Length: 209
Image (tube, rainbow, N blue to C red; front, side, top):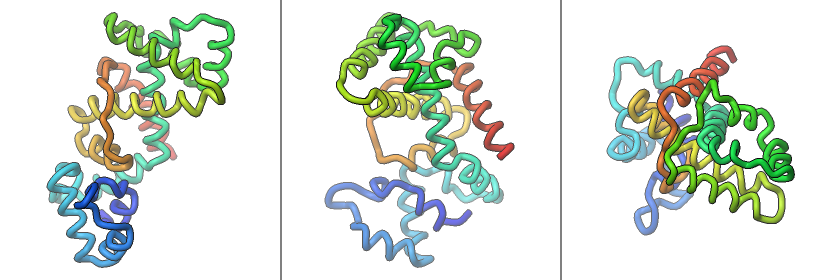
């Protein structure tokens, strides 16, 4: 595995925050030397990247993971998971203008949210109420819908992927986490099967690319 490639992708916030955070110049100088890269990687391995940076005889698997799940593909996966997670609220929205705006913003993602063969959209009352309130809030804001909707879906998608991958693919969970700054994620609520369906779809496209 190339530490240079990995460290170049990791969000700088994972190297520390506040008084403990190295400045950009110090990080750049550390990343420019083999010793510095080892020190940065060791700090990550002691915290958010225990599995990803664990010594392994199969370093090729980590390189494959990083190549297959680059930033663009992970973003697409997480956006779809977030959209699916909001399916109960999206399906419940029947107003002509809100539906038009959601269709225009989500494109094919709107069809994913409606697809009951992927997920039936059943969630408990508290979850449905929270999703409905959050969606109503972004629909009620002025300006382009995407500016408020996409961050909402992406954050939920990150939560859904983290919850699933922590059990199924811990290295992927860590890699995905490192690409964004640390954040308090909302609770995940998607069942395992729909997450697996969406993950498999994106993985198949990544393998074929």
